[in-house]
Length: 102
Image 1 (cartoon, rainbow, N blue to C red):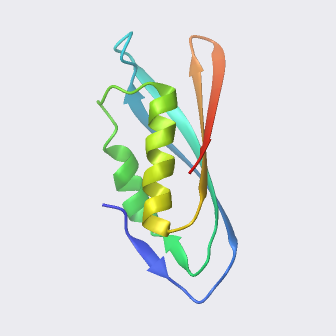
Image 2: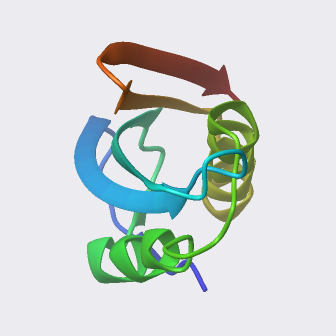
């Protein structure tokens, strides 16, 4: 479960974090770097819960695009503000980047 902190601050937040999921086609583990950006309007992601949230995808089968959309929507719902999520991965030597604003 994503936890947030209510703070008396209004700042732009950019978080870069690594996690993994499984490719549904090859069955191999895909390593991702997620860049999460949002305007904090008094509510902020608690980083330990963010880490635990992303760890739930380890061992689960996800396409890059679907995973990016799920993370963006879940974070936006928790924060009550638009969130931009960019996922980066190296798929067999091809750098892949997908992005979603929710």
